Image 1 (cartoon, rainbow, N blue to C red):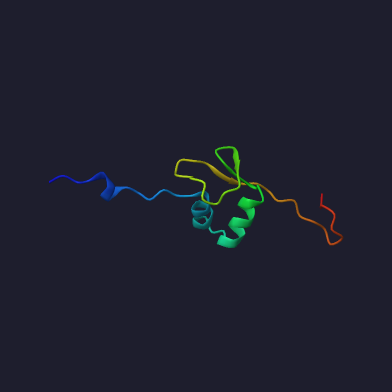
Image 2: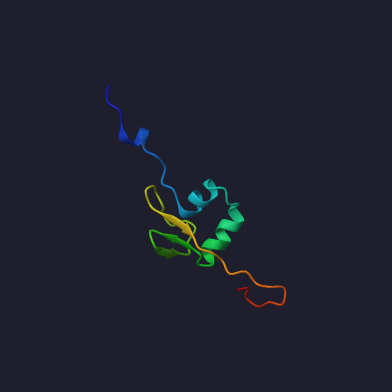
Length: 74
């Protein structure tokens, strides 16, 4: 009996898939990606559909917070 490789293939994961699987809400993940705060293997991505299969390293960079007066907090 021969098993086709396509029967056992894992679906490709996107950067959005990876962030959502890590526990980030989908709408927030899309906001972070489009805002340029996500890196895949050290490269900034802005497309939620960007491929990010394991073992690609997906990073969410820190987003500067703003104080109540609109200035960036230190």
